[in-house]
Length: 377
Image (cartoon, rainbow, N blue to C red; front, top):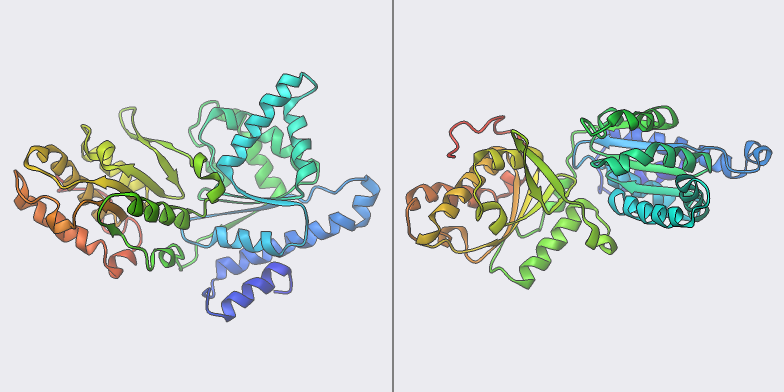
């Protein structure tokens, strides 16, 4: 490992901050090859002949949660000697792109997509963005032309995703218009799959309080900090955290106010205070490895429906080994002091207490069961 990313990676391994990981070494080698190409294009014969940087392409890192994708991207960003450069998350990056497109269209001067690509190329030579995910037709329509033009203008790209390129915008509206972008990634970027044995996300859970009492500003601030710690989302973009419409069944969806990198944020009122059933909670448990739940109240006798839904929710999360971080008005044992279903709630108390244990937090997502047989509706 003689390149800039490899040297930084080796230092972290030697210090014990990272564990030896074959997949990560492959990714580091790809990033160092990318750095070498980038260095050649910035000052080599080809760039002088062409009069502009050659297309340096990039690296697309994909794999499951906690495999170190964002860490490796940050190593590349920090140690590849090129400027100017920008590190962002994919969601705010696309918001910025759409704002620029609106301004370019208003000017009525040329192709707005090409104009925006040139703007970005003037501002950055290395663009590193986290969590590429395409969920709406507006993004899908422009991405192939935008990124092709950016690469042709010499913008170097490092990105991460939970999906392989072939599964981006899967089942999306008019996906055929998006297929050229997939071809662009597969032909002009080095695609690296990370699926190593170490789940570094678990390290980020270490030291976090998972059950905060009482509800209030302090608990909310701690949960917000946990969210940004688990997702690597930039604090300066906190007002643009993406939401998600989660498919439940028969065309029905569940709105997730904040959804990023397998982490979802819900209020108790929305998740358990409205008419929902096991299908909703099963969809959540399958989709997210961590759920942050705010505003859990003490459940009175009059809240037996809310209590029953909460029991079903916790059963679903527990069976799928979903990590739960919550702000509540009481400890689990005091959440439902009396009322219909209090006897059944004892199991929920036991599960909530177990879900705070180091052993539970160390388990992988979805290992306990593939279905929720026996979970109450």
